[in-house]
Length: 381
Image (cartoon, one colour):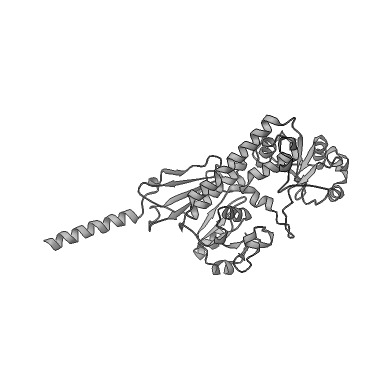
């Protein structure tokens, strides 16, 4: 009798543990673990009594509508919920391939650059860990032309992906090789702070969300303090022109875009206020000339490394006021020999530093004299 009771008790205990670690339903993952304050493209949820979490990514490429991808981050031997069709990775992923340099910056700011085993376009990355450890970090190629043998040899725990006009072309091959992947859609965020907040999503993957939140927390504080300082003390709003032609078209950002918001927060007046859409719009050279002629300063001047080079590229623009006065600035101060630009890398997780640069350009009077140096930008001479 005692043996029967013991066997029954053992069966109940085993069953209890199995239930605890077994699959639940997707509907059980309804507890908010982290809801972003600034980003709109992700959230982290959990289930009662479970340590595992789901990282939900919303509309992770341009033009996506009602598209959601999910990454199950497994802990304590727990299985993905029943009916789950997304990707699964063990929490604390230690071998990560980054298909964008911004993901490198996110891991670096978390103090976890040593988890990076592969990147895309290594020559164009400025991160010190990547550039100084040629044996530790491999170049797997670009989306659409990936070295699958090299990628497989890296034995990654996870590949961080992006999509442009649709899902990444790497998806089928990664699935075939059994390599988990996750989309990171920070480039679609219009808020500078929203872009930076994606570092919290990455920290969840590396099982360090508490650290991710602590790293992110002071960024909005510093950004807000700078914005408030300009709002209180700046005199006037300079009109700001941006960009140069790309692929034959001069694209002008939306008034709700990342760059337009930075200009506004730095106390500037974005010159192309009529674009209130949710995307950049192309204009012809004639309209670009008219806008530049109205501008007090010109930002993000393409590939130009000097004012002379800019004038040679666009001779008609040489007589505009901002060019004549030398009020032309480019975000290429931290660019490497191959053309990799840290502005598009670490600048994503340091929007407060980018804002400081723009304030130093537009309203140096609100900053202390010894606090007017530029980090990402430089004036074209």
